[in-house]
Image 1: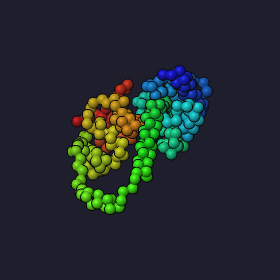
Image 2 (image 1 turned 90 degrees about the horizontal axis):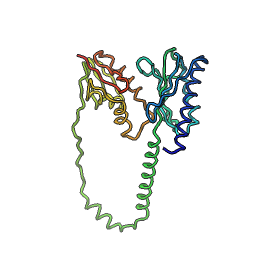
Image 3 (image 1 turned 45 degrees about the horizontal axis):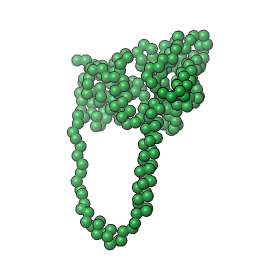
Length: 279
């Protein structure tokens, strides 16, 4: 890593402590400590506190956007405020360099005083490089096609007509490889194509991403699945890291599985999650 990058990352940790400091002040606490910032992965950090606190989502969103505006590598990131007891998500939001892609909900709802920690995950620098390379390659390809269309010699009309009439029509249709689309989860039926959970006479709709996450669990029930695998298969394989939060989707899926108490998603500390189906 270049020296300038080391300096930028050192500044980032100081900015994260500033977020923790201002969060405590907004909670009315000017005495207790912000604990040392933990670097969970290369791009994920954790801010912990000595004592319990409360927070106002509006103020927290404003604080993180203002403070991290001073970080040149932090244009896209996901913030989750988690409960210390079970790592469940109390509140979360996603900030993007393109403001229309921000995901911010439930503003104006003050959270109860409890033990929380803040997880902030930044989009890796290499993702920007890959995206920029893809855009540049696409632009060059588009320019090459346009140049060919406009600069190629024109064919006589008679030749064009002959060539056109010689091309046979193709009315064939493509086929898809069959794949598992129906799963049984306890007393629930999970239809991946329709993106629905069904129990008795009740139907629960799922989003596209919720369906993809649940399908991974359904393929290997009662087995621990690493967090990194879910992130890679759901987002990183598509070149998108930030703008979505895995913890938020897990929390939403838990609520949608509540109609059947024998089916639940459990947290495996330090590893990931597991879809537990009890008989």
